[in-house]
Length: 146
Image (cartoon, rainbow, N blue to C red; front, side, top):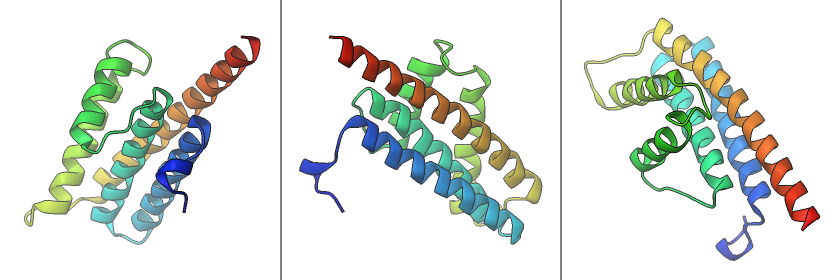
């Protein structure tokens, strides 16, 4: 494991966060198939969270609090049209479902709920991956022409 002094460049960090996001998405799908719907909702949410983190890393930002990462993502990327407006609502729904299934003893995620969040997590991952690759490509080509 790299130390904080040797984390690599932004592209390396984004790649690591994309790997985490994709891994969480795979975990969500496996848990869904096993009938572990609470776990599937949790992993789908974390796939989304790591996707959000990827975008922030492009700007040199890392957030410890999920609330901050999501709020700034919505303000900077959803409300400005970089990502579709419905993403804000879907992210909030995934966060709420994860919170309820993880912490509310009376709430159990359903197959429908977990599938809904996995479908969005997959869509979100694809959008974020494309956005990050494009930004990294643009940033790389700009730095080469200077």
